[in-house]
Image (tube, rainbow, N blue to C red; front, top):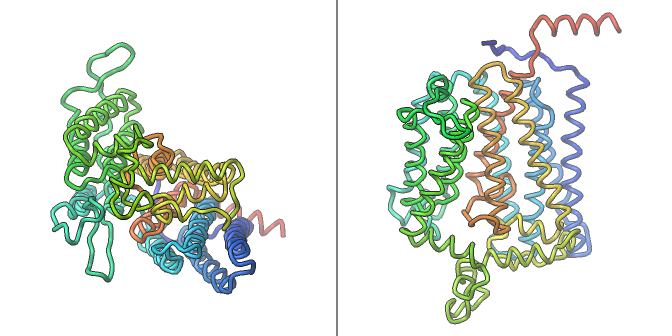
Length: 473
């Protein structure tokens, strides 16, 4: 197992310059979109353009300087990609706020972005060697379990919002969603556990057709995770986190063992659990009904069902949001209506759960494909880090974190487009909210730390390169 140097070793100046140029280009794209919104809505450049531009640029410059100092050999694409996605989310929230959506707040999201960048920097500064977490595998896992289940045991008055018990509210001052941080801790726990047990879990029992099935005695970890996901689904009414955690564990189990049978068993377990939950619990059944029959008057809502709010009430029916999102995507077409020229404010929660649909209305299918390509590139850079890692823990952890990003995007995009039932997850880095944004910036910091360790050349090679450059001068 190779060691990670504690003292940073300088990256070549040309490499640092390319990364800085990409970061500046991402900020310029964001500010161009911001100006575009102002011109479309008011016919003039927004008054705060320079302030927002300098603020966002300053934040990302600070993140870049910390990265260049404490993780100089990290993948140069990761930070610019996240900056661009986060910035486009800020633009859409500003557009919705300017269009009259009361709960949208660009100022609040900028503040949370600043805190997220601070958490990114602190993670890089404090966590010099990510493999130290392996010694605390079970402590990290226990902490993640506490954070995940805490809202379920708290009174509904401080933990429940719209039926889901996933929050901890501190009066009217602030609120956090501990499950967002729990998912990071649980992925670290999964990685540490699977590294220790991968040889046992890779053993096979009987062969069924073309699959080598695992031994019955080794099914324990999968069954425990399955039960945990069902408990989250039942007691917290959080279908998104349940699907996210179980899917991530199955994916990491496959990475660790290379056994397709684990994936098949995981899919069968979740499908069975979802069917039982759909029949036994009304809130799960309502999600499935809205998915299967979104345009049905019973699920979509009518004036009689909705009460005085009428069909325009956000609480009208279970599929009202889905249908409004689909209408918005259809209105956007291939090229979109243009930033600031659509009506995304007709989509309930367009600033959070349905920001993908709001973006699709104004940027069209072309813009959504470009956005999904940004996510795909981010996931690809994370998987490249996993392939380049020198130790099993880094491979599993980088692979698991990359899968979380990809899986979360699939779940939310699938729900908004009615490919799968809507789960309530938010679009990473784009949706308004503090907990998810902070957790995702910390996730990126972990990927950057592992990328730095994987890409850092041996000290002797760096010394030889420095001598070569000196003689060339």
